[in-house]
Length: 171
Image (cartoon, rainbow, N blue to C red; front, side):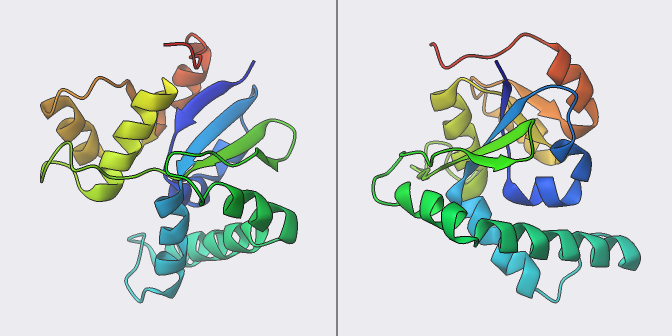
């Protein structure tokens, strides 16, 4: 059984090691974060402080977009867009990694404390009974402040999170 984490699509582009885990992992990705990849690709704003790192990440974003636009993967993505909270069939990234894209919806549950994508991450984590995986310390702080009933890991603790208990879809 694989470990499951809710994550933004861009995190996988930034942290390539997430595609090379030591054990099977399923990333649950809100669809709006997939759409953000296109915004990041076309934005003149740097994602990383170092220009070489920024160029590398933008290349990885480009590769990720190209992979998701392959006909079979595109069809899987489109299947989840018909109904709110529906999930795509698994999109495989090698033998150990799969993505499930969720057509998540921001219901403004956390008001202005969390932006719409952050709210979708939290709500998806609640619905899927899976922890959030992020590198954003401010997001971690805000999730704790709003007392959202989700587990959250910093990407720096990814290996530790992989060693923990397997989170199931059973509530």
